Image (cartoon, rainbow, N blue to C red):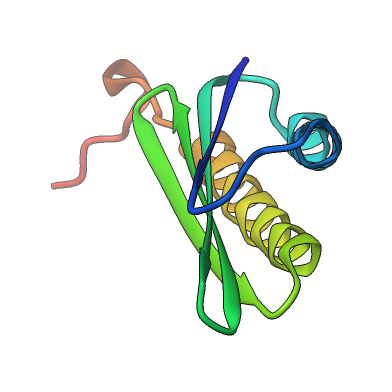
Length: 107
């Protein structure tokens, strides 16, 4: 998985980079087939915004979270992304086709 962290009106310090890296590693515990991850951190007056775009095979997931504290916004963001990845994974696992030869013909 490649991880890209960018900041708008914000300098990405090594501490922020390490925090985002450790938090996004939590998503990989549930689903390890993430191709690419882009994290965008920005500061607006009175709030911090964190966005993530995760590229999976066949789907792109996008989440956004905002809070007064940057670290709290990152925590909320990772929670949302984790729930979306789990939802995607369960849909992919439950989608089972029965081969056409095995289907019964009803008259």
